[in-house]
Image 1: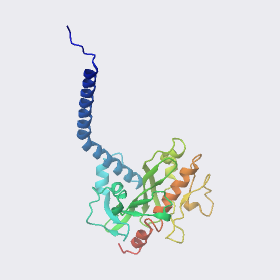
Image 2: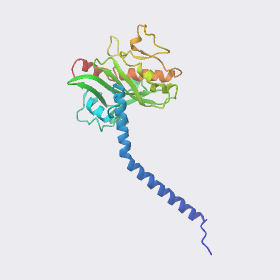
Image 3: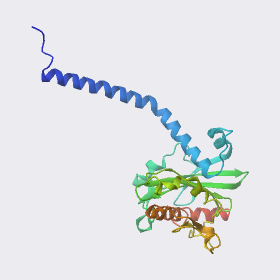
Image 4: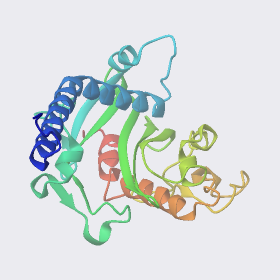
Length: 259
């Protein structure tokens, strides 16, 4: 009499065996692909830094452009001095931001909606000798549906914007997702972050279109049509990071030659 292969025990055995085999293959693939995933992540970060700093050159590789033009250093956001004992290429500030021992709680200062941020931030510089020609700063904050992560680049006066871009967000395509629109991003170039008071950022998005003849046009960016909350979020995160609770004290030190 042939064996009965339709018993519950045999069905469970086959199912479990199949799950184990699949799990082994998935785990092996994840381990094998992790180095490539990390390399791709680093490459994407470099690409976005170069784009914000207006250093894109199709005739050269991303690594070549980055290595030949950009210097990375870690900044202590509590003393606004360099943390030279931390390797900027291996430091993970997203991981640090989740650790109360490595982060700064914001409380009622949190206009960016991030609750806390890493004590140490990796900043990037384009230098000519000892002079900083461009400074690229990591920024992030809440939009409508997501946290937007990106970079803002400033000229050596630490007031004029070179460029701004977000490399990670989940805003609505065609609405808040227009933060990726090259035409909109192009409006940031040449805008001034500060007015007479360098402690408070004046730059931000407005409702509608900027009037080039308006008295505040140098600080204004077109709002994102149909995406009021994303527009407010972008304004708040930029103001946060470029004001007294973000990088402003560091920029004041740079202007005074104290860093």
